[in-house]
Image (cartoon, rainbow, N blue to C red; front, top):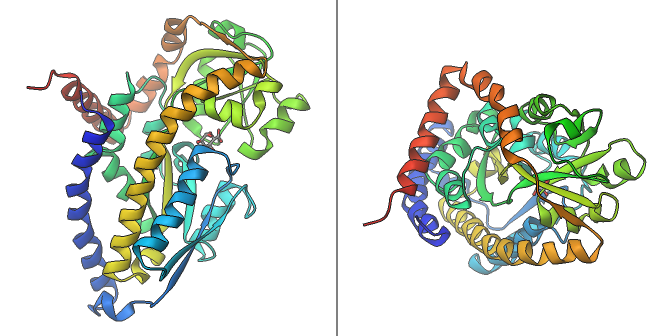
Length: 349
Ligand code: GCU
């Protein structure tokens, strides 16, 4: 099995191969004007996210800002608009498309409504281990998905780990039957909505920054997330039972506007790409550390971790796979993911 560092190393050549391709596209769309001619001497890029500033990925974006400045000797800067200052992720994706933002943070759940290619990452129990997640998300399949939306005005330039998501509420959820009559906050992902329906709950989309008050006011009876987010948002104070069914492992992405990318010259593109790669490695290490601390912090906040009948949840969501496979492209992608996971699980020589 490959470690994250090994997987990460393996991705570098692929990305370097993609770079000239991107530049060729720039040359073509600019009527073969050299991308150098379009260079800007200094670039301040604007990044929007709806995460609290303590969120592991928000911290990675600050690291990215430092890296960008350092690697460009100060000629490139990142201005971050955190905490949903610029609106919800959905709003910010719109702002990126009309040029007000250059980069936007979005989880694969948010991205599903912009391009169906991201729905795969919202399938429950897709990855058997973190190593399989790394192999797919940080390997050729992830890269292909990240590049797939270029003609829609954006693509993903970086990916971040986000652990396993489980349910939390003020009562334990040990089997799908416990979800009956419960309104569960979800991200705005059709696949996640269908997953909750199949499990027997009532999915209720709510923006991340509004979940605390939604729980407090009883707009929702529960939510689902990874342990660091459960703690960092202080949802643990309101929903003490964290029931570990570990239904999904949804990656986070940093998206960039295709127009912004094309406006940068070769060197600036490379600097940005390298700084993002650095922030990915930084976030991965930080994640492991914060994930471990978060369990303890959750318990200090009065939370209880509950063991569940995981097989019952897995069985409840099987129809979702059948529905997903009805689309030939989806079925093929799933097949490739399974092959990649199997290869990753072979003992290394
Ligand atoms: C996690 C994830 C965020 C996402 C959030 C949510 O914290 O890292 O990108 O927005 O979950 O549930 O909305």
